[in-house]
Image (cartoon, rainbow, N blue to C red; front, side, top):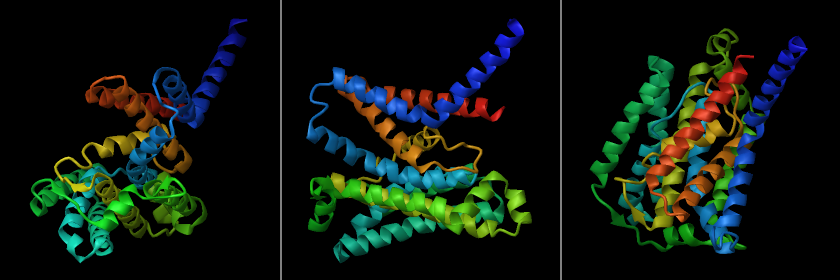
Amino acid sequence: MTELTLPRAGADRERLLRLLQSYGVYLGVAVLLLVNIALTPHFLSAENFRTQAVQVAPVLIVALGMALAIGSEGVDLSVGAVMALATSLVSLYLGYGPWIAALVAIIGGIAVGAANGALIAFVGVQPIVATLALMVAGRGLALVLLPQLKDVRDPGMAALGSGDVLGIPYLVLIAAALALLVGFTVKRTTFGRQLLAIGDSRPAARLAGLPVRRVLILVYVCAGALAAVAGILATARLSASDPTSLGTLMELSAITAVVVGGTPLTGGRVRIGGTVAGAVLIQLLTATLIKHDLPPSWTQIAQAVVIVLAVYAARERGKR
């Protein structure tokens, strides 16, 4: 009886861990929704859902780039600094028009991503070290360009931050479009297949003749560009450029969304749907704690706990 029970218990535990990694993020979102419906006043109002969707949009956009980096067995710690750099560039070039300012900001993000990719692909620096260096340098450059908060008064930026189509904010539409684009890229393009192959085994990818360096540079260029877009949207929503605080700890939120969404830190796999759900989970968790008068520090603690649980589930599954 005991000999039969032990294998069955092990199989049940493995099945539970597999289900948690694949669908745990959706369960978490459902639980938080039910808790808020029961305990949070006016949670079901249209205005509240609009607010939550607008706030999650920049996190989701940054998380999409982070998912690509993690899928290649890397990480990008510079995304928050890129957001700060983008808001500084928007403020500096807004006099030429909002489209020019946004283009310059995205070019700035691409430059940071290219620097990250070059350090990783050509110099051989570990992703965590390379992007940490650009995180410090990027934030410093943003503060040199714009040392303090500055109001952004432009009709185009105001429309981007508060406008909508059929009641759906522009920010949400942009985030959804980018999620679909990144998902298509990962699943249906040669670049996406090469990215996953490199994340699964970089030496094997080299032996197979894949352009490892080029793909790695493109991965971090995409991450930088997406972080810059998030910085532009956050600037438009806030109607202000504040490089001292914009994007602070964004890398933590992005990594949490990606890992909780089922993308393993070991690379070789990217779950865009899970990343979207992970970003929603982080936003709901933050909103729940704030609405119930808990200090912001509790949000960071909760995110850390969620990351540990997600990584543990992935690690236990990887042993089998």
